[in-house]
Image (tube, rainbow, N blue to C red; front, side):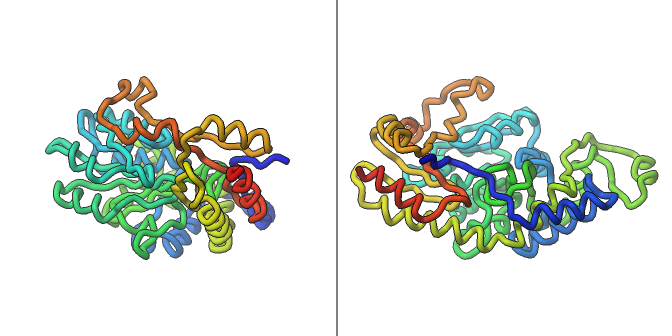
Length: 356
């Protein structure tokens, strides 16, 4: 028996839909991208405008530019995340100030944000790890006090809500990923949602070399380019995948939530196991992590750390000594299998092995 940690899910309807897209003249950025953006606003971000891009990292980089982050600016960011959250800050030559995590969620700790914020802080970056929302009210209060924007990395938080509101409809900027193992995948791809409608046209220009996209190709290149932009657009092929996945997303999300509920119920009373949760990832804290990993592997179950503290990477300047919760938990967290192809019996089997 082999239970994979991750496994991509592509709805069957995608095949036929892509064939139709391939038969048109649009396979790069075209009408399907606009359709995907409109559908995202209808189902996820509401009044926050959606900009489809080539990856979640593209979305983050655009958000950092739009937030006004420049060379030398301080940005408070989580120490625990996939490095793609923080690497685009280096593109901007910003100074990253790592904030500690909370012991009950592995998300950024609002109290540590407050300890480390200064008059030089330009923005706050948060990650909803595994799909568990951060303490957005507390973080927003800090941002409001210092008059700075919040950028949410919601790579794992498609469909997540905070106090009844969708992630993607709250902060100044929210960045989603459609990488292969996310709930919605376009192979690669991402979405940026923006609160301020006045900067949407700027975002679209940055997405395509700083160029204003018009209906006529000759007009597009004839106009002046006044700002350096990037090749961050999404293709209609990817957008077609996203549209089909989003149409079926309510059932996809429910399946993940049903699996997460089993994990929660089965793991909550096991000594030395703390269930962190998340609809996208199942994250636990365990005292003897290596022993558990080996036991799971013997029973054909994959597990992994997946993500690591970012100060282990030399590009970020070396290990910091002011994140005690991260120090405490870095050898205890473990990610268990969670994907669309798993059934309830698979989760029950995993939990039985852990109980043994």
